[in-house]
Amino acid sequence: MNNSYYDSLQGGSPGGDALAARVTQVMKRVYFKMFLAMIVSGFTAWICASMGFITFFATHSWMMWVLFGVEMVLVMSISGALNRMTSSTATLLFYLFAIVNGVVIFPLIYVYSGVSIAKTFFITAAVFGAMSVYGYFTSRDLSRWGSILTMCLFGLIIVALVNIFLKSSTMEWIISVAGVIIFIGLTAWDTQQVKTMAQMAPQEYVGKLATVGALTLYLDFINLFLMLLNFFGNSRN
Image (cartoon, rainbow, N blue to C red; front, side, top):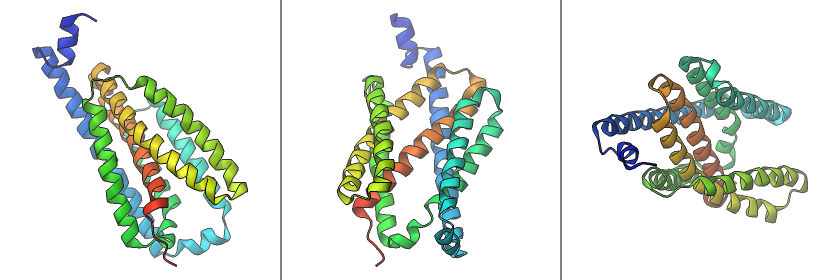
């Protein structure tokens, strides 16, 4: 890489200043969309709890598997068909995913106390924020780190699915520890990935990129929150 190109990426020229401004614009939109999606999920979870949906899900447990399937379809649609959809469509699907995820996680309100949920949320926010800042500002290439963590994540998913049938509390604890480590690392890597894409993407792609980045970091945050809840969440019983 020649020095002039490197300087432009670092903001060392007028072109670099414009690039830095665009990256900042993209990251602001990413975090705003992510924050709004969390509000949507939280509000949806509160509505479901208020309307007593827990009774329905208690007698129709298969519905949760349907919702998991819908989430998978939405994630794959946003990520895989992004180039074939408009920015507004991608945004709409993202917030639809946030609503569905709110329905999926609302039973947590009945399992854990409100104080412990709030405490875990703020702990998650602090950890997520620190790692996202690191991923954004570090000059270290995290791509190898991200590849390893992604493979570990697939392994973790397989182990978690097996443990659904084994019902091992020890295995559940190990999964939670590994999950915290994996999603802490993925937060930094995904942030760097979004920043890198923002540097290279054309201006007309900014809206779509902001949606994909928000979805990616939203998933990191939610999964990290769920893993930490196993340690900091206090049962209502």
